[in-house]
Length: 637
Image (cartoon, rainbow, N blue to C red):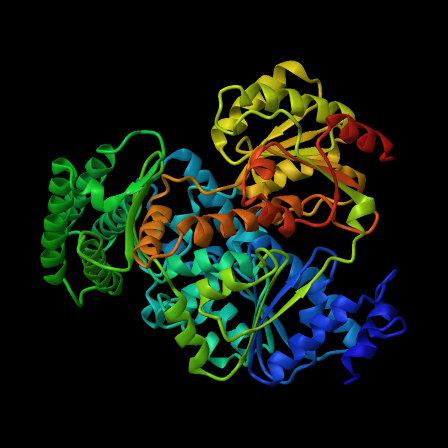
């Protein structure tokens, strides 16, 4: 196998395969650091600015190495792109024979047992779901992988999906009559047999937390683990190290019992009655919270008499269901599984109602139909450090946005990676030539009522100067909707607004119309790659500080205060810096791109912490004048 330098050189293997490949020092430096971390079983954290070519910089060492590598990325879309586009290119260039596999979470695979259960029983579903069910049945006769992603006809949130896929709760594992034909088992076997496996962070941490019992053998085998989009990991890992119980899980449990009663255990009417009681109480519990989705402190909610009373009734009803179910154990495999689910649900509810615990946050969120109760650890550093030190292997964490104010301390502290080697690589782009940063003059305070008009006027000027081709990014859905509705009356450009359809459909529509303007919140701040003159301006309404009434943030702030540190400097600023860097990163995606970043927040000029934000952004030309912005945009062909 040739050396890394020769792979990345101007006449090397990558240049042979990829038209227009240009060697970049930063890319080679990163590849060498990754190779060393893998060989020496060390941890490495790399911030690689946009355009460094970080994907190839970790794929080459992973494919050149001897051992088994797991590559984990932020979303299913990035996972598909990595597996179907980038990996084959590098594999071909290196002439590698290494086996590769793509593995998704279990909700992405058809469950043959669940499909058969819903086979002849149409009384439980309405006509829309029946149509979807027949689509799935037809596809099930031809699919080789069972990957639900092949079914392009179904919407992403199709109501049939939970009926024909399994969850950790309802999977029978080795007791399932369809175990040998199970698509998830086949995909796992293929992954265990592969040398390089592409997963996503949610799947990785589900496996690591061993919630997925019976399938937790994926990670132990790996010699190296590489996380792309690593800035997302602290929050995702926290979810998996905690507990969550939703009224939807309780409804599903009751539904599965009813299905079993109607098909197999027709003499167990008492079981159906007890399950129905749990379902009703769960629905009543949801009704004690407002219709509109919200987040709040669950420990405080339990101080309300009616919430505590309803939670107590639920615990009691689950106890009765537990007793009734125990009478029928051994009669049916699905029922034995349901018994296990009832036991674990009772344990979760007990943990979620114990308000005396330290080091965790108890919080809840509501959707229009459900209530989800959460228990989240305030820090995962100690747990993750133990996991990393348990087995000698190479760990690589990379993203375009990990550093705050020139250092990695924030990420290292959150992940327990204080001993890791770090490497910061600048983007190869010439930001002084390619980009401009504008904080307009005379901005009111961010929360002042006058801000709405200023945002609207600024957006109109930008849209006109860039002839569409811009992203307007917001920190709240409320502001997004307000500006979107007012712009609709005042500009002729097509407006594509997050929430009206799927993210991918909005992006496709944006690329198809050169006058379109895209308005988004969280989902469009990262993981969106629009190149060239399709995107010449990004406007951000204000610095993306997390909402101060977020219950998890409040708990973390209290925790930091108890330790005598400053929560604003320790938590809020670093997280806002990383989010802002993600949003800004949408603008310049390749060496020919040009564009303007407009941030409508006077705190970038007036507050003492402004320099931390500005120092973390690429080194663009700076201006306070929208006239200069218009001139710059007009000059872009």
